[in-house]
Amino acid sequence: MSSSPKPVIVGGGISGLSAAYYLGKAGITPTVVEREPRLGGVITTEVVDGCVIEGGPDSFLAAKPAALELIGELGLAGEVIASNDDRRVTYILKGGRLVPLPDGLMMMVPTKVLPVAASSLLGWGTKIKMGLEYFRKPGEGSGRDRSVADFVREHYGQETVDYLAEPLLAGVYGGDPDRLSIVSTLPRFAEMEERYGSLTRGVLAARRQSANGGGGALFKTLKGGLGQLVEALRPFVPNVRQGEADALRAGGVRVDGQWVEASHIVLACPAPAAAKLVSSLDARLAELLAGIEYASSMTVAFGYRREELRHPLNGFGFLVPKRERRSLVACTWVGTKFPFRVPDTHAVLRCFAQDGAEVEALHDDLQRIMGFQARPAFTRVSRWPRSMAQYTVGHGARIQEIRERLKAHPWLHLAGNAYEGIGIPDCIRLGREAAHRIATR
Ligand SMILES: Cc1cc2nc3c(=O)[nH]c(=O)nc-3n(C[C@H](O)[C@H](O)[C@H](O)COP(=O)(O)OP(=O)(O)OC[C@H]3O[C@@H](n4cnc5c(N)ncnc54)[C@H](O)[C@@H]3O)c2cc1C
Image (cartoon, rainbow, N blue to C red; front, side, top):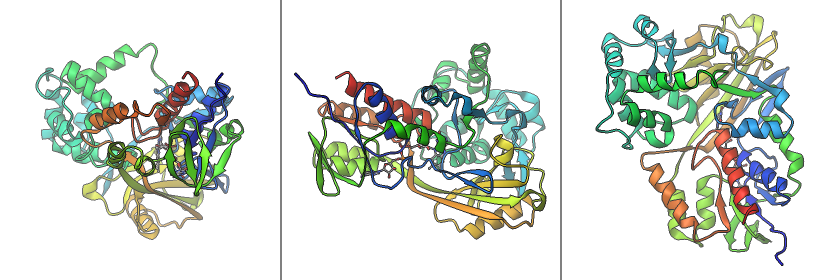
């Protein structure tokens, strides 16, 4: 007769908490080991002067179902809100001016002729290349992994890399398109290239297919911020042990020097921490995990009295391409992007920057770019050193080898943003899959 399994989960971010929740649902109570005194990892929400301030992620892709499924199970479906897509305008800084992204762009893929033709964001050479891309046939290069920059350049030219792909990727992944893999970072575009040759035709075909089932906002979140999700998970995770996991072996994890019994171990910590833990177990696995790159970033939320900030805030915010960048990478006009986040009395500008940026320099950038003089009533800074995994060229092959090696250690599981998707829904999905494997073994 086998006794009840005692899994240990290392890391109390959304990946580890999801694994713990789904294990609990299967009647298994794991121990979650978390180094920090709080749970949630990079998810942190604070309310300041009635404004909901997200220190890390602020929303998730609605098209990937795992987040909405978990939220539904936790009884939070009524708290879900969508971005205000009727007010969606994103600006790009070009030549010191904020130029709106033309209507009909799906990331860097144009789907409408007139708005792109009329836009001052791109020159005529790029516009003509974009038009001709429609006639591209599947062929050489299709399906081949290469950098996002090479991929976009082949389809739409260098200016599209500089003024669309680079700022979009820097704003979402803190990533560099010359290093990121197209197949692992934007797999849908790689699939479209393989099938249609042209990305424009691929996106139009995908839209037609989802015309009935699709629609709705691209991004969703919770009224009170994503911290609500962490709070709702908390009662389902009764065994939390604060401490740092510093070694492991079959049957146990060492936490601050003390061995804790473990029938299964889920490493839901960032890959460099996972690499250290498995180094004495499997040197090649450790090497593969340590090879996954991470970017550091920071967010700074500046809050103002609304009457002092003289700006219409007529959009979701703006992105700063590398060619125009000092310290600021992107800025979200929070109250326009989401309902319930900012009362009418205030305005919140949330900046995304490379780690190490000076807060005062960021504010100077904001004033210069947006053309205002106001000083913030409050400022909140969150630093995220080495928190965003970067799927560089060859990531797919690396993950395949990691999966192969894990077969030799059936009690060891990986979850987190380093493997199959950086966003919250993929982290939840990997946590749930690890739980499922443990519960059914
Ligand atoms: C600034 C920022 C903005 C983002 N925006 C979005 C967004 O809008 N939408 C979206 O979908 N995604 C976004 N992401 C990505 C997404 O938030 C993360 O990928 C996801 O939350 C990571 O969750 P995780 O549990 O895998 O890792 P983490 O949240 O990093 O949690 C890992 C946990 O492991 C703990 N830990 C590490 N080592 C040990 C150890 N040895 N022992 C014990 N504990 C340990 C850490 O303390 C931490 O709590 C953003 C990320 C950042 C940083």
